[in-house]
Length: 295
Image (cartoon, rainbow, N blue to C red):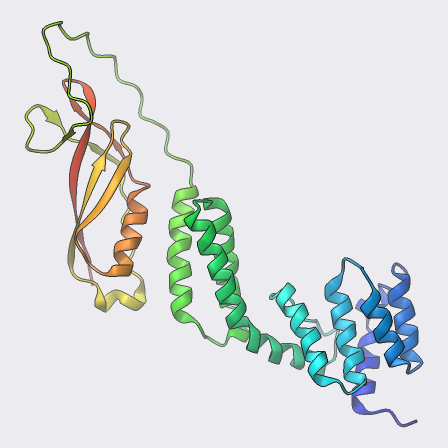
């Protein structure tokens, strides 16, 4: 019986070193290979469909080869899509597949990667919103690697900008806080006649006797390149810094750009100060920060 080009292609893949490694350690895969070698493609496919091995990527790859031999190209592409969906970074090597099979993987990856990247972004953003900083950082790094894959062919540049910005914020939030400043000597007990400070009052520069906070960390995020020409030159944010030197609230008083304003708000939550004091006692303090954008 004359074999088609697809048959020869699949035979070369199943005879590859990567498949040969499975012969000694996985009986069902070896049995499926023997069925294929006997041109019993339907039986080989039925055996592969019944396997419950943890190596689903290999099973789906071999299923795609059998489906190609049977001329069931749409189903073969679906099997390849299952491999790509399970592991978007996987691409068969020259030792695992022929150039034609690798080209089929490339075609499917180019079609599916944008949708997969959008799904990964949604998952990473959800962990960021739940303040799972370490998980969000890892997922945004994986997403950026996927967006830089050559089969993305430069698509989703805007999504890459967003992912990069959220990665910076997640990395900053996941970083351990700086060591607290050395404790100052406790102030001498106030005379009984000195009134207690009012609870929950927020002081400002107009209040006499108040010593303003001292910056420990106040890093302003860089403006993303794709919105540089849309950001205003000057902006202003108002902070409330609590008695521990942490930012308890952030309000944009003079906006620069909707997306960049959100980057600043996210970064401000990680800023740290030596708290303001009144008569040596830490107090809440309202502080205005001017933001200048250099071109």
